[in-house]
Each structure stands twice: as structure tokens, then as C-alpha cells.
Image (cartoon, rainbow, N blue to C red; front, side, top):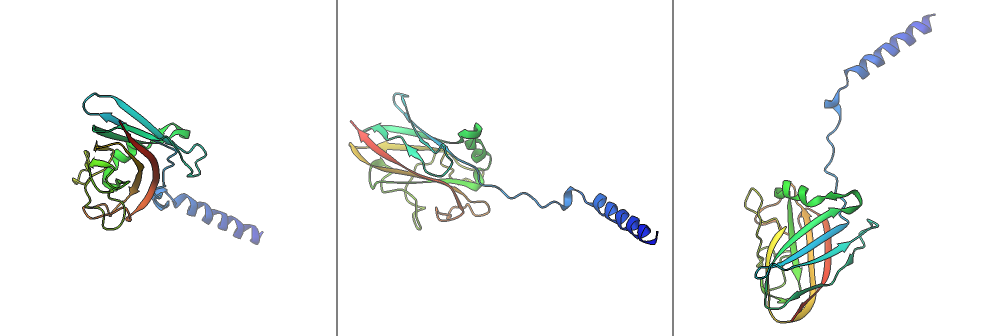
Length: 195
């Protein structure tokens, strides 16, 4: 009987302990990396309004993308819109990037001087942040995001066009580079500027 009394006291103490726990004791969820299995590039000709759409897809979610070959006209100016999706879940990651623009930035790298403007080879790599790029969107702090950019083609030429989406919570600034933060996605399209 004495053992039964101790058992009842122990059970009562455990019940009181569990009842006193609340949601404040639960650790905060970490910011999980989003699954991006579809990237859509839309080059809109500023003069004609014609749209040229190219995709990278990773239906297995393994990080092994297949790419469309980008083909855009020579001697034209384009506005590029970039979309990121979790196609398997029917979810737009672009919306999250827009909402958390102060934590995200898209960096670009391309074959040297494949574009008339911007010239050079992009802003990926240490020390390349200040290299010319034509960002058309900004976060609330005036820093570029990269979902909308401007590109002017020159003569016919071929090369590569790389896009790196960085997640930079607490460190996106005027000096943060493509080496800061976590890489959400890194893709490289073949590109041809054609006549």
C-alpha cells in the first residue's frame, strides 16, 4: 500500500509538470531552406514587348537541373524577370523572396562581355559585388534584390549565364557578396545572342 501511495504522488507530480509546460517552452523553428525545383527566366524585349521564356527544372529534387538554352536577339534591350518555384508542391518561392527581400539577393555571372550593358562578367565571387549590373528592384533598405534586371545585347555571341540566389539574413548589406550567407540555388544556363 505504501508503494502505491508513492506511485500516486509520482504520477501526480508528472501530471503537474506536463500541465505547466506551454508553447513558450518550445524552441523556435529554424528557417528551413526552401525546395526550389523550377526556375523561370522571362526576357521581355523593351521595344516590342516580345517575351522569351526559359526554364531550369529539377523534378527529382536532387539538385541536378536540366536547362533550356537561352536564345535572345542581338542589339536589343531586355527586362529579365526571374521566378523560383517549388513545382512539386505548387508553391511560388518568388513570393517569399519578395516578402523577405532584405534577406535575399540574386547574383549574376556571364561570359565576359557577352552583353553590351552590363559589361564585364557579373558580380559573382569575392570582390565582384561592385561590378556593373542593372538591378531594377530593391529591398526596404535600398539594396538590390535581382528578381528584375535590365540587359542590353550587342553582337551575336554564345556563352553561359549563371544565377545564384543567396539567403543572407542578418548580413545582406551594400558590401555583402555571393560568398556571404547560404546558397538557395545556383544554376548555369547556356546562352546564345543571335541575329
